[in-house]
Length: 368
Image (cartoon, rainbow, N blue to C red; front, side, top):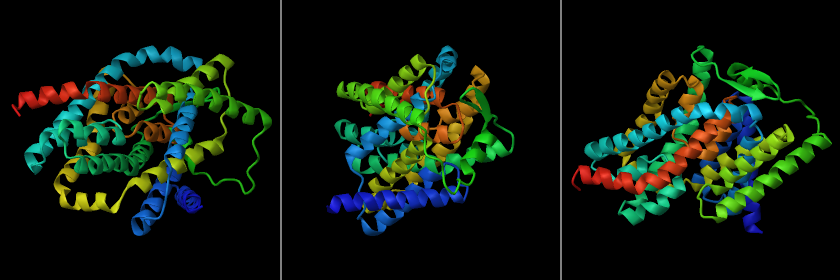
């Protein structure tokens, strides 16, 4: 009963924080507000709780949300994504190696630990495999956490600022209409109706079908050992049924639930020991944050110029956040979520597949 109460308290605090941020017109407010409140309370009390099973359910739902936005037109447009995706894969390798070498030279952190800390893979994935390569796992996990939190707390505001200045004009498909980022941001910050209408029967059936197919596909892919199988499989499963049916409706309340859960999960895994480790190793943390805030903007703009990929998609695709979190943020901010999700899926796969080779090459180059 104690765990159930702690979980309910976590979700309630996350929902309150998310709603408060939403009312304050914070970009992606439900996720950011949930993250800040849950993290603050948990660091103070250590009492909050977010179970693994709920995290996995959230991953499936996040994949469903992304897949539900994929249309037949999106599939036809995907062929134009091959060259930009390859360029972004090269960029992520450069991002990792360059940031790691700078950190190694400036802060004294060993090169392997620095590479794992800068790697644009999943936070839990990098922490799990880092020990096998002789890295300092106690430092890798806080570094990965800082990378993710820095992205979530900064890029919504960066994109909102770029949109207000007219520097980016992303568009996203919503039904048959096209909505600009300004309209999407406005829609995300509008005051909710006092008595929101209940979803109609068709929306309930559509959402249930999308979630059902996504769950099966996600579990099947995850059972093969693919680390991000739940969200990737869910995304492709929901996309397949959405395309085959000609378009289904996904309940908007579930999107907010996904944001709240995503923020709450991250808020519960940040511990006092992580903060203590970061306070001791503040130089590599500062270098990592600067890399996260500067390099994605520079390389995203260059890839936009080289490949003609939309600037908003290139910038967001170059942002080294988590697959689930970046997909949720992209959807909330009115960006081209399907294409951004494909880019970040490729990033995760390439990071995990090529990481041993990259480490060997870099350490051999520096004769370590």
